[in-house]
Picture (spheres, rainbow, N blue to C red):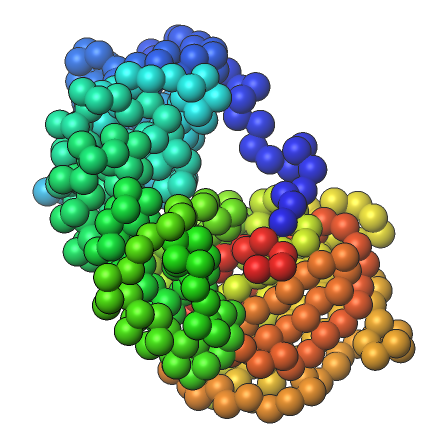
Amino acid sequence: MKIGPPALMPALAAVLYSFMALSGAAQEVETGGAEELLESLLPDRERVLEFQRRIEQLGSEQFKERKAAMEQLLAASLIPAGVLDRGLESEEPEIRNRTREIVRRGGARKSQMVFEEALRAMVKESRKGLLGKVVEVMESGVEVGDAALAAHATAGTVEEGDLALLARLAGGKNAIGRRMAAAGGEVLGPHGAGILQPLLKDGDSAVKLQAAVALANLGSLEGARTLGEFLFSDHASERMKAWKGLLSLTGREFGYNALDGADKRREAAIRWTEFLKGEVVLVGKVEQLKSIQLFNGKDLTGWTHFRRGKAVEPGEKTWSVEEGILVCPGKGPGDLRTNVEFEDYVLVVSYRATERGADSGVGVMMTGAKGQPAGGFRFDGGDYLEVQLLPGSSGDLYRIGNFKAKVEGRDFAFSHRRKIQVEEPLNQWHEMRLEVRGGLVKVYLNGVLVNEVSGREGPGRILLREERFKYEFREISLLPVGE
């Protein structure tokens, strides 16, 4: 699995974060050290009070005062997260509504970007002893969207004396914080077992999985048994981690494959469960699986919404996240596309249609029309292969724009029907898996190979089509080719 050209990645490492004073003066802090970035997220009391005054002015009866406060808050490069929380919880509807608009237009995201850059710097610098500042930033209200990065940074910075900090993270409401506690607990070995044990019962599956892996790596059979529960998961990435982990821990197989159809998986998973009930000797460790969660279950981080080839303007109806589900608004034609390109991967998309005729699709290998960047200068914004999502026809292929491909040795004209019928009831979750390698694309629906096509080699964006119907997506994951 490869991520596209570095130029397409957010170039945060080279950016200077300007912390604009509300008076209009600017203070610049270089993106240099992890500790400096963390400290910049904890402004002094006077600045917090000044921001709070501006939030209160959003409810002013004076139009000019409201307008000035709104403009200054939108222009600020960094707003303390606690200030935004106070605005969102205000008893005055006008303050709540205008604060929501600030958040929607990136007010909270700015703090998150700085925090994630600090975490990257911690990993790069191999800095020990910064967990206290990290916890302080999180408890101030700043969020982090990249859970894997947060866990990695915690594992790299945690020290023997940090048990109390890990306990605070483990006991908090923030699921990413609890996942960080699990990562830190594994590093501390037997001393961290007390942190890990309660997390095996966590309601968040990612936290529970992280704790299970950590305890299994410490030799705990209970951790391995909990890992076995994930063989039954609806999420391919969780099944993959459990499967590969148990293979490494025990050297056994039982005919299980995380990417098989549900019935075949279930039979093998039951055999695994029975085996793990015994006194199993763990002989290995769980290796890190190089997967990417394209949808983080919270927001549209990593994606941009386009309609008719142009990015959606603020205020337009866009894709939303409802209780961890990505919801297509059905106001197309349009698409939700990744901000970076990928090459050679297994893409797993879990989706659900709620009405007959509901139409959507998954696009892969998207490049710009006539060799230019796929940035929105044409109706569709680029050339790509679309895999249909339409009950009764999911897995059909469409050639969008000037995408060149061959099917069964012949030039791909416009569309190609799937080769086999697969049951696809409405209001149920289904799994589409696309294996993309060297230009060859294999399409699996609920574990059954339904289509394949040979296209161009090289990187391209991934997208979800927006048509005139509501569609729901639960998992969008990238796994390494060959898994």
